[in-house]
Amino acid sequence: MKSLYLTFHVYLAFARKSFQKQMQYRVANLAGLTTNFFFLLVQVFVYIAFYKASTEPQPLSIDDIITYFVLCQASLMLMPLWGGREIADTIKNGSVALQLTKPVDFQTYWFVDECGRAYYYLFMRGLPTFLISNLFFTVTIPQQPSVLLAFAVSMVLAIFMSAAITITIFSTAFWTLDTTGISGIAASVITFFSGMLVPIALWPEWLAHIAGWLPFGGLIDIPFSIYLGKLAGIEIWIAIGKQTAWCLFFMGFGRVLLSRGFSRLVIQGG
Amino acid sequence: MHHLSLYLHFVKLRIRSQMEYRLSFIVELFAQASISVIDFFMIALLFNRFKQLAGWSLWEVGFLYGMIGICFAVAEMIGRGFDAFEKNIVRGDFDTILIRPLGTFYQVFANEFLLRRLGRIAQALVVLLIANSQLSVQWSLTKVGYLLISLMSGTCFFIGLFVIAATSCFWTVQSIEVINIFTHGGVFMGSYPFSIYRWWFRHFFTFIVPLACVNYFPALFLLGKIESLGVSPIGVQLAPFAGFLFLGITMLFWRWGVLHYQSTGH
Image (cartoon, rainbow over all chains, first blue to last red):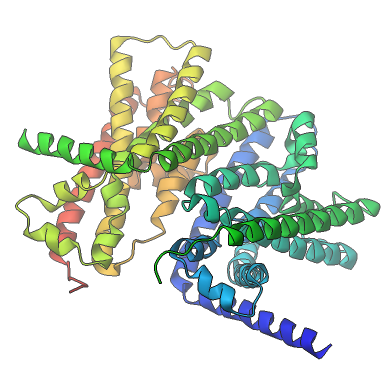
């Protein structure tokens, strides 16, 4: 029991370190905040214009849409592949060898590192984006504590899933060294199928169906649908179960990939 | 003339060095294209549900999207020297540029060429061509010339933005990230008709940062939409020149910035 506590303590320290590392880039964060807000503004203009022209009833009201995109911009930096380039770098420059000699699990280390980064952006980017948006737009806030609780759980799972995906994708550096191409393609597929660009509720049925079979809705679509109250009762449990399952899948898949990678790892020089 | 042949020589060298990593080049070309295909697919999804946007059809918006996409990708391809200028200051490389017997602006411009933006250019061009085949634009020699001038003007506009970001490095060392609002943000907002934005937003992006002049107004003219909006036709026809003017002003800013250069390294 004590050893378990110690292990937990060590990884918590790593996560905290990662959080502090991000603190250095305060000006960059401010610039990012401005950029986030600009994109949000344009998105809102576009959707207001679309809604104005349409008389048909839509699955999401314009207030829902605005809230949805406020949440999207607020959690943009929590998405996969924004961080994690360091993982590929350690493999490329060989410092991975040093890391493997330490009594620390490689995947867990990067997982908590990613989580630390995510929590930094949740509080330093997400929260300000959300608060500032409240001054300009009508942002819905759920009234029931149970909805808020489910949203919080779902959001944490989204962060975990994002970290697991990031590690999996950057660990391809064992094979390709240059991960720019593969991470670029992955980022575009993930962004699209998460529902970040256009809410999945507005997609044609066949495409929404495909998205339902893919894991990426767990990053955006599921937590925000819970937030907006579009999922209720048992649906919330199913959605959270889905997120958990995909999370475990990516953790397992990443682990297999990494162990394959370690076995073929050749370090130059030394 | 000498400058031009030297430039072409530089470009040839850049292309050769980028083709050294052929596989990674091809993968990235593909990545670029796939990212932008999804980008346009998103707009198509919205039109599939809402049918029209402020009186614009999908392919009219596609026309806007293609134009701005080409301009930005070409600007990124040839204006890379300014886009990636930060490292010259951080490493102190700008000292070398200063002692060579050529203008600084020319050298930084000729320093880089990003061939892999071809993927993005191709995608935007395909969208523009498909849009054109779906619309009935009466093409004449004047209109083709006008389109080409508009595209060049838009490219100049984006290069001008890169120049502003690069020049700011003389003071801030690191590039100002806020410029992303105008570059990437500009592409995003330029993909939709300007009439959907609030008046203060529209005015800012017409008179201060002339994005509308290189994209929206030319498209209005080419698609024959001027009459419906009550904008002065002469103003619309002259609008593309704002892009060239913008680049000219940023070049003056550059010249002024160079005077304030303080070396970081060595």
